[in-house]
Image 1 (cartoon, rainbow, N blue to C red):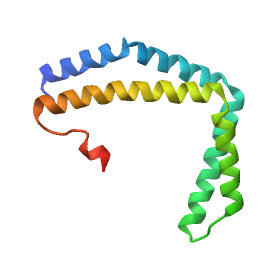
Image 2 (spheres, rainbow, N blue to C red; image 1 turned 30 degrees about the vertical axis):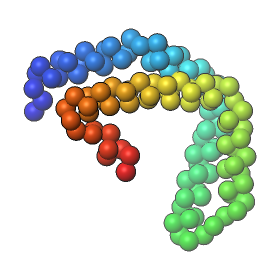
Image 3 (cartoon, one colour; image 1 turned 90 degrees about the vertical axis):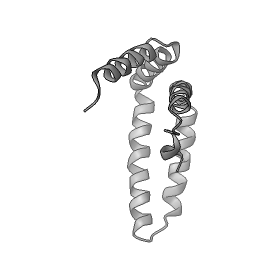
Image 4 (spheres, helix red, strand yellow; image 1 turned 60 degrees about the vertical axis):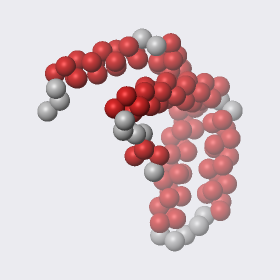
Length: 118
């Protein structure tokens, strides 16, 4: 069970992160992405085709046409401003959280992020 003092500090840290400009920007870009109907349709289609591709690969089949469709869908997604802005804001938020994890790792002399880099 988590010590109440540690739990309170973790909640305080989470609240501080929620107050960051990077977090607010991420939320706004997430909202804009969800409102972009074209992007949402492309994402659903991409995920379905990606799942089909992986399923075929696992059964030993390689579908070049499906790979081409995935590449084309990826290009269409990358051309959507809402997608690009979402990804950029997500990466900025992750960078900030990564700095927090690195600082904690340094202070407790344990590389917390090591497990995620494997």
